[in-house]
Amino acid sequence: MAYDQIGGTAAGLAARLDAELREAHPLTVLRAAHDQFGSDLALVSSFGAESAVLLHLASQVSTSIPVLFLDTGMLFGQTLDYRKTLAAKLGLTDVRDLRPAYADLATQDPQSDLWRTSVDACCNIRKVLPLDRALGGFDAWITGRKRFHGGDRLSLPVVEAADGKVKFNPLANWGKAELDAYVAEHQLPAHPLVAQGYASIGCWPCTQPSEDGRSGRWAGQEKTECGIHVARAPGVAPNVGGDI
Image (cartoon, rainbow, N blue to C red; front, side, top):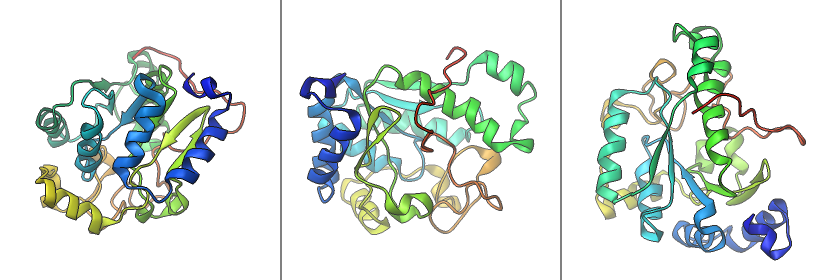
């Protein structure tokens, strides 16, 4: 792994990088991530309401950074169209569509209605497991999380260690004003559903229009994260059963 070359651990390297980058511009964070990990670095994107900013920034570093897109089978058609349009506009050359394993769907969600009875289980087979399998080939990854989203993200570091990997959150320090200014400066296309009142966009059964942040995601439930950013207990390995 990349961090072994300097004789450290993921946690040790993440702590050092966070100390160096916690006040840095997102582009500086991305360049540092790419310099450190090169081909062992991936970016995870939902191609949602705020995704254009991070993807545009990453394209300034390298258009060949692997972009992992969780195509859950429950996304809005507008999201699938936006993924193609935005990737083409930014010249991204390695966007990988991650889909749930057929075996998982057949045994756990044969009627595609698991979300009605267990949103956590639905997210697990459609997001968590596919991403775990894909990230097995990388030492570090980039997310688009931001502190202003609230909840568990309020104390989000710029660099952290998670499940033995280094995780970069370049936009942690930015608020909506910075995001909007960046979009305007670079004339980035908006997700089509933003104009219809969607501030955060996930799967259609669990997403509602909302005026701010992520309040429209899993509305009326205690759930605030799909699971891909939930820390596991030490020693608990990712569940990587099934095929992509």
